[in-house]
Length: 95
Image 1 (cartoon, rainbow, N blue to C red):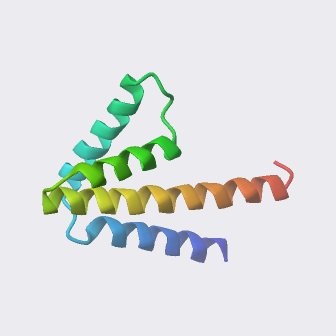
Image 2: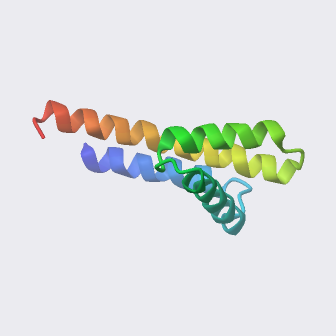
């Protein structure tokens, strides 16, 4: 069952990343977001990445860049959910 869940997780990630998505632009944009957070003196966290992406969505006018930000936001939110569930599993298992 865990293998199936892991396969489904990877399939969702692949779907998010392949839908009209420029991987090089996405990597650059995510790096830019991470650098912005780190330069502000904050530690890098999913919460800060999500907030920065939402802020950029509100300020951006270019449609292609907006799509990149939306897809990155979807990816980070999804990964946050996966990490949260994994952490819950560790707690339940006594780890």
